[in-house]
Image 1: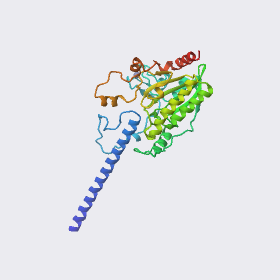
Image 2: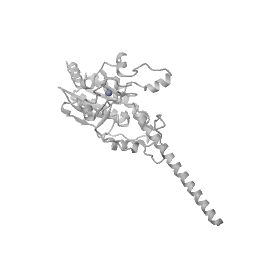
Image 3: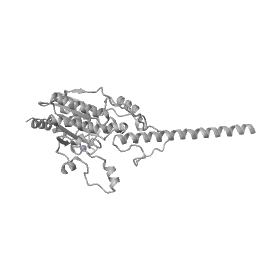
Image 4: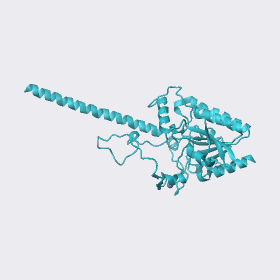
Length: 335
Ligand SMILES: [Zn+2]
């Protein structure tokens, strides 16, 4: 009898221990995932999506549901989309036809390089260059995961080879070389590949006597490349002076968002610096500035309208008029 009780007690203790271990393992894993989500969101310039960073309306009380944001099944592309500015709901097809500008409030949705190329070039025909230049993890940089792993995952996830793509084609009657950034590739960050691609694009401009347009959409320098990333500021700025010497125009189009090393160098070095309506443009973000100076910022601070008023920009261009305006500018430069 005694033996029976003892063995039962042992069994219960064991079961309790196992339960405790499982609960601990689940907790550690979900905290780790939360941190990863927040880190990714930070890179992309968004606010965190985990429960910790946002006061949520619903709390997960039931222990069984443990799907992290990364594992959630995405709804198929298409069907419906909601404007983040006015909550207007329309189909993706309708939005696409409207060049990703909200039909109701004129909010310019963030789009990638292929969309810009389609908007700009006649009949959507263009040549893409330097796709073979790829990033490398020279510093063996590791944050939550190694830079090499981050790169490989992004390549797999996006089909984009780096944060800028260079294309050349005709815009109305003009030949134009365009570099357009993709925010989904590590926040459109400026790394050595972006620097090299822009500098080769400038060589292409010199060779073809073609003007250059760079469409900026970036959070700034790529921290995983550290000093190599910062060197690109000087490199591109230096190369741009060759365009000036050859009297070839360079237009910089700043879109939402353009920050850090981009706005601190070639983003603001255009013969014309233009921007899309309502784009956030600056060096440090509003949150950082507010925390540093401990004061509330004026309304519309760092938006393109604010910058235009303060003399940073030449004009603001609606996406629907972009092609027309660029073609007019190129005609004016030619004469
Ligand atoms: Zn809207």
